[in-house]
Image 1 (tube, rainbow, N blue to C red):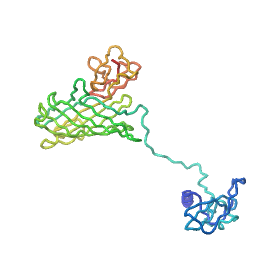
Image 2: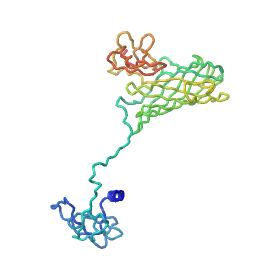
Image 3: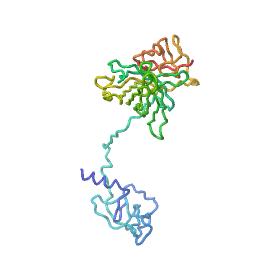
Image 4: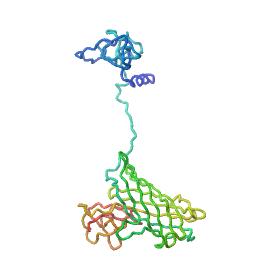
Length: 353
């Protein structure tokens, strides 16, 4: 059986079966087909030139090899490897048969990449949001960390914003580049650059925070440096980076901090540095015809995703939730998702002011 398979694979891997003799017609040959000329002999050119020929009643082909015509090649020969006579008309042998070709129990199982979800896309643009957490500073060597948050200037993008670039042709990877402009303990400047990639197929962001620094009260006063990593998921329905986390180590501390193996960060285990959460989304397009006012009891205003993202909020901000079903209480019948886009999971529902 194994030897038969080897014969089948070897013969099936070439276009046609080379024959050094005449061939008899196979079963099912078309008797009305136009006759082919007999095989030519002697000199030829150019190299690899081909022409039609016949092996008895079977159509074939011969090739110019090293200046001489080859024998006529056709698709019939004996399985036992015994050649028929040369490519002259006539000659007789049993037609070539491949038993394996007649089997219906041979199947293949192909492993492939799961297709992307049909829940949207990853549109490029400027994303804005929030970044918060706790930072353990060498300038404040206590086990009580300093609260960190981005700083939003009126009329400007959020203090945490980044550009999501379009994907290159045929790719699903999109570059992310941005910055953090925040405050530590609501007083000390805290800044960093953001770089990374969003895989739109898997809806996963991975990146770095680099060139980070903070200072006491004003830029340049006892500056300390840090760097680290960031990751998040991407919700294609709302075009929002969700479940974001970041972790940085202070490189100027003595001894330097190190990235935390697990979050939240632990001062005794990881040294000086900080960690926390973040989220970001495309600003609201006020010209979007699909925007509608908020239902009763809610107003359209600024939520946790930057000053340019209009969300339905109450006196405490966007309604909090633990599941999508919770959002149905505030937005019945609208299928609003519950997403972790701040310190808490919230119902993200854009609105028209």
